[in-house]
Amino acid sequence: MAAHFGRRLRKGAATTAVAAAAVAALSASQAPGVTADGQGRQTTADTTPSPEEAADSATGNSPYYTDLPPLNSPNPSPSAGTGPGDRTASEAGIPATVLDAYKKAEAALREKKPGCNLPWQLLAAIGKVESGQARGGRVSADGTTLSPILGPQLDGNGFALIKDTDNGAYDGNSTYDQAVGPMQFIPSTWAWAGRDGNGDGREDPNNIYDAALSAGHYLCRNGWDLSDRGDLRKAILSYNNSTDYLNTVLRWLEYYRKGTHEIPDGTGSLPVDRSDDGTVRPSPSSSATPPAPKPGTKPGNKPGTEPGGSRPSPGPGTPGTGSPTTPPPTTPPPTTTPPTPTDTVDHLEDAGTGALTAMAGDAFTKRISTRAETDAGKAVAKVRIRFTILGDTGTTFAGGENVATVVTGSSGVAVAPALQAGETPGSFTVRAVVVGRAVPGVGYQAKVTERAADTLVRTGDAALTCTPGGTFATAVEVRATYGGAAADKVAATATLITSADNPAENDKGPYFKDADGKAVRTLSGLKTDADGLLKLPQLYADDTTGTFLLRVTTAGGAALTVELTVAAAETPSPSPSTSSPTA
Image (cartoon, rainbow, N blue to C red; front, side, top):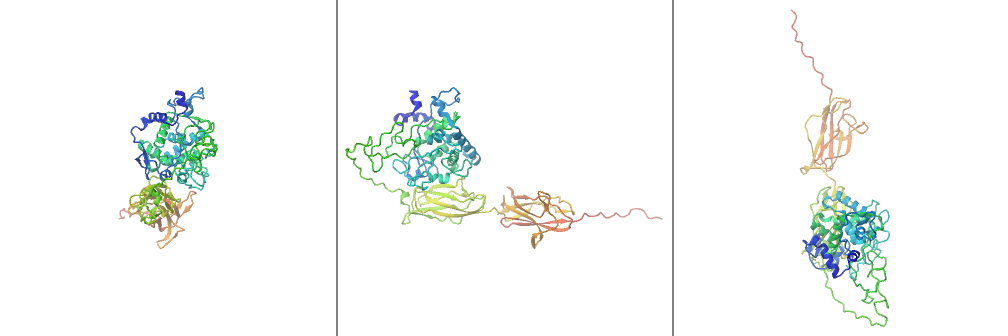
């Protein structure tokens, strides 16, 4: 009995009971049937996710492996004498390259989003459930799967309906989307969530380094803190909106947290059971009875397909479909499905957004508003609108992501999260589209301007004087402000000018020194510090005496002219004689 349980858990009443007992300690305090809204927040519901909700998840709610980990703890790590039949030892082993990818992704997210607290074991749990750790670590040296890992086509026939979004670029299917790679991203999600995890300049969903880093960023969006139980559940459900999926991932997460070990690539154990085992998905032109599985294959899967593929359509005479003399089955009358709100959307309109301009590093004061309307111009509520930032300015939405999904309210309007300007000046576009519907979107033009100052003042009032050939004792320090607040990281230039009316560089008088000790009279590329302060390098004087001018300017037009004096040292006058006159 124990060996049978360790080998395989079949889906059905027995599996449900075992799974419920296994995850009871993990989920007793949480409400079942949780679904995600447009902001990634969770609400309790028992309904099946809509196609547009599936399209807004990482996997499109594709099938996943339902195998549970062994009941025995993986600790201690197996010794050299551990037998090959020890399931606890084999399940605790993670292929070397796959394990390295998970740990590198954790390290990257610790630096980029430390508040997320992403554990690599969560990536391992999802990787186990989605692809059996890239088919047991069947990857090349750079982490790319040796053969594609594709889910079944999401054609609405037993799965979500997601029509092609990538022209088959990732999944080879130009009609419907399919989940791709070891972390099973659908192309529409990969288009904005994809990251380059191995530094080769490409974002490839079939590469475990790219896929793991992308999954980490996906799980860390919306400001979620994965050390918080509630946020952890929200993040997992956003990956695949299923309570059974959530419980399976949590079970593997707890198992891997108790101990794992590295094993050679290609030697990992392969999962057996899938969430769509037993699902009947007939072709429209075929009998409703599925063909009998071939020896060595799982029901409902093409031989050799991992984790799953399109199910073959049975032909005449196929075992289980009846002989050619069998009367054809009666076709049930078609049913009419009422349109969803998304189905009624004809177009999107700007809902009075206004000009979008912000200084680098600042938050935009205006937020993007988009209205979903029918052909007659009527507002459509409960529609998911995806906002995507297109451009290289470094601008993100609050929380650090370049994509946000918002559900329209009763007025048909979706308001995007606040934009946070990046450090690179320039223009960019925010594109708003309807999730799950190919209707014209709306593009919003936005601009990031360079950091600027409107006022410059000296921080001290000591006279700046020097003798010919000497060194100025006091360095020049200025403070930059913008609107009365400290202007940090503002570009500045300091020049010894000819006169107040002639800003050309002076060829004599005070000067700075470059790295080689040569005289320079213009310094560019300067920047104020976090407090808006800028302290200039030491000033020196040549043999020319007189009054000279130093002008400091910043982006934004702030300017300050400082007077410098070079004069010979005063010679003390002889003191009058105090001797008495002679008699």
